[in-house]
Image (cartoon, helix red, strand yellow):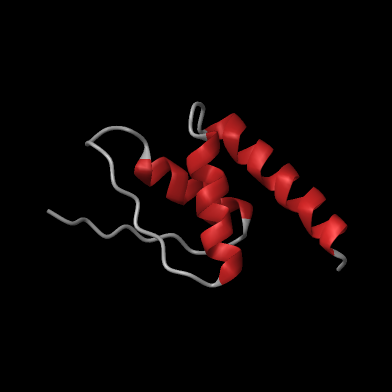
Length: 72
């Protein structure tokens, strides 16, 4: 896959996720960057702001299993 093809597919995935999780475009781009670079991702925010929804949406978009780890 060429860099241009990757960028196109990355943008399509980010846009589709943004339709499911409204208002988190920058977080979604950061999340996808972490996934595709092989890094670790920690989502931090106040309760009820959609962190689990972002994780579920990512898992569904990439045909992955999603599990939730709660931290307090």
